[in-house]
Image 1: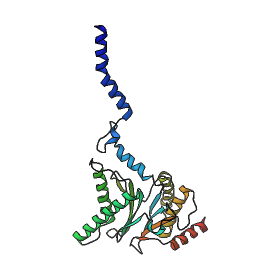
Image 2: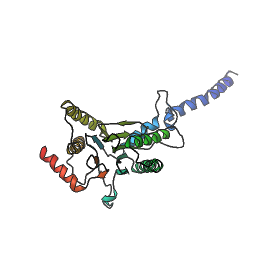
Image 3: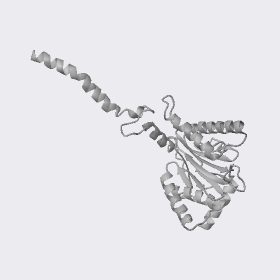
Image 4: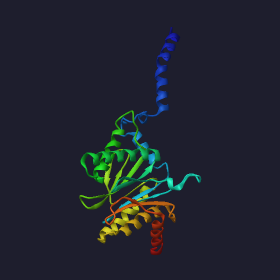
Amino acid sequence: KVFFLCVISLCAHAPVICFAKMANQRGTGFDRHITIFSPEGRLYQVEYAFKAVNQGGITSVGVRGKDCAVVVTQKKVSDKLIDATSVTRMFKLTERSGCVMTGLIADSRAQVKRARQEAANFSYKYGYEMCPDILSRRVAETNQIYTQVAAMRPLGCLMIMVGWDEESDSPELYKIDPSGMVCGFRGCSAGPKSTEANNYLEKKLKKKHDQKVDMSASDTIHLAINALATVLAADFKPTDIEVSLVTRDNPVFSVMSEADIDQHLTLIAERS
């Protein structure tokens, strides 16, 4: 009888033991669902989306000056057979605004398409162009919804948007992350070297602020290129980077040609 009771007791606890082992193998399990918070208040899938931004090894930098806003990013062609002119991370959203996308390129194109649709619908409905501030907030709202619905997933990309605001008559720079957070910046970056780039920009912009120096368009471009070159410890050729900007003289979002990039790289080399 004693032996029989022991067998029953072991059998009764067997499911508990098996369940405990399965729980240990699976970990916490909170990273399997987008909409479930962990006990620490974290959404792991959103954090994984931030890690996906760094997967491509592309670092981007954005800087806003008094009369100019610039974005600079690396240009990498993964295969020698690919036409280099078809590879870009610079996208025009409206006539006076555009962005650089960092992260998964397929997700980036999907987000750009959605932003263009929002801008086109706004222009058709109200009869004037959507300003960068409203457009960036609309993109951020869409990103935030992706963190609430289980049938969707956060996009593994980060948008740095620049544009010219007609109402304030000034350049604008915004950063929209996968969680739906959006803020205006004087300088920002994205990618695997973003921490180093932010530290570099913070020191340089603080120095210019203390000296009460307003950056010209040329100074803004040079600061953005220098920030990227410093954190990557690289000497760029015109084909290694992409540069886009909006200025007071030309508020239309434009991508700089290789010849213009080469001129700025030459000026930077002469100054150093």
